Length: 499
Image (cartoon, rainbow, N blue to C red; front, side):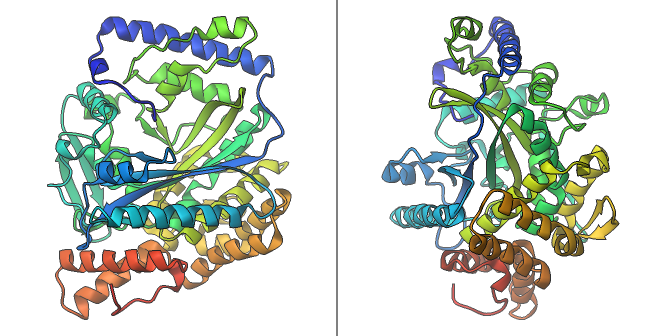
C-alpha cells in the first residue's frame, strides 16, 4: 500500500472494478505459472524491518506534524502512515548471518535519533509504542489523515462497503470501551513493527505456518498497548482495535461468514498460491486501479512481471502474517511479513523480538514433526487473542504442555528452540545470547512494555493522586525519555523520575 494515488483517481466505477478483477485474476494465474516454472530467487537469506512511530508534543499529546518532519528528513527510508501523527521507517534488508543484529541496531539507533532530532525542530518527538495512550476521540477525525490521497481514498472505499460507522468494543478485565467512528482513523492509534523473511516457494508454507503458530507467544511477550482512549483494556489492545477499526463488514455480513480484512486466516497452508488465491476469491477490491503492465505478456516474452494488481490488492488485506510477492534486482521473490507485534519500547527490545522470531521460525519450520500438525488452527488463533488480552501473564495451548503459562513455555521450550534456530542461521553466538537474554529477562521478571505502563500509571494515580488522563500523559513522557535512553524495558524503574 505504499504506492501513491493521485486525486484524479479517487472515484472508481463498476467498469474499473470489472477491469481490475480481470487483471487481478490474470496476475494470479501468472503467479501460479511462475511457481510451476520455478522462477523465484533462492539461496538468499534476507530479512527486513519496518517500524511505525508516533509523534508527540512536549505534553505527550499527539503532534500532527508528519508532513513537516518528513520534508525536513527528506529520505525515502521514512514515509507517512495513516495519521498525521504517524511515521514509518524502513530498514534496508540484511543477510541473516553473523553480526546482523549489531548492524541493525546501529542503523535503527541512527534512524531513531535522527527522526527525534528533526521532529524536535517541529516541536515534537518520537515515541515507539503500540497504541498512543494520549489520543482521544477529538484526534481521530478525518482532518487528521496524512496529507496523501491514498489514505482518504482507502478510508472512503472501506466506509462505502461498510455503509455505517465502525463499531469498536473491547472488554478489559475491569474497563470497557464501546464507541463508534465514522472513519478508519482509529487504526492510526496503532503502530507496529513488521519483520520480513525472504523464503523459497518450497519453504514458504513451513515458514508461514510456523509464524502463525507462535503469534500468540510473540504478542504475549511483546505486549505494549494497554491503554486506549483513557481506558485500561488488553495488554496488547492494538490487536482487537485493528481488527475492528477497519472491519468493512456489517453485523449481518459477519454473521454470514464474510471474511474480515484484518485476518488470522482459517487453515494451515501447503504453499503460497493458496493465500494469494484466497485474497482474490474472498475480498472485494478496494482500490481497483489498473496498471500499465500486461503480466501474462511479460512472462510470455521471458520477462519478470511485477504483478501490480496482485500486489496492490494484497496490500489492502491485513493478515497478521502476510504473504508478499516482490521483485528486487530483477528477480522475483517471496516473503513472509510478520505483523503481530507493537512498536517499541526500545530498539533493543525490537531486536530481541526479532531474534526470538527469526530463530524460532527457523527451528519450527525445519522440524520433521512440525507443531502445526499437532495444534489446531483455531487454537493458534485463540492463542493470539489470549496473548493479546493477558500479555506476559497469558496461558497458551501448546502440544506436549496443554494449557501452560507463556513464561514457563518460553523458558523451558521455546527459548532453546530460538537459540537453535539462530545457530542454524549462523548468527554470532554473542548476539544470540545478548538478544535472547533480553527475552529471558522479560520472562523472568514478568515485565514487558504493557506491564511497565500499567504499573507506572497505577503508581501515579495511587501514590501521587493524579487523575487517569494526567497519569497517562506523565507516564508517556517518562516512557519516551526511557525509550531514548535505550535500556530494555524489563529494567525500567517504576515510580518518580524525571520526564
